Image 1 (tube, rainbow, N blue to C red):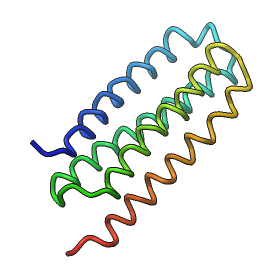
Image 2 (image 1 turned 180 degrees about the horizontal axis):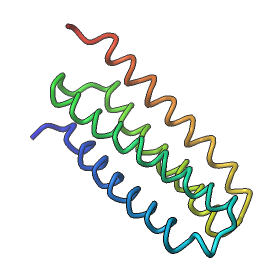
Image 3 (image 1 turned 60 degrees about the vertical axis):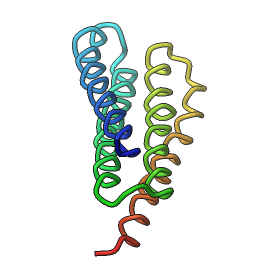
Image 4 (image 1 turned 120 degrees about the horizontal axis):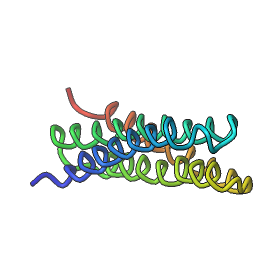
Length: 127
């Protein structure tokens, strides 16, 4: 079994959760949260969905090109980014605890590291 396969699974699970959280926001939260907090929650959903696809891509690329520390870094950075970025936005939206917004940039930084590592891997891969 390819060791990168876990990123496909992690991406699929996060894609599933992003759809579920998006539906939850659209139906259950729309009459509970203020417009601003609902938008915060939806931003978390958007970034989780996008980076779920990035995780699947990392797993698929790893399946083709083989195990790579740089690709592992990309995958774990995307996963960490989802947890820190989207997670902090979800909790902030649901609790209105604004200081949690201080955690969000760490997730954004993890996303940037993930995209940089993915670009590095792709740029150094042999054709």
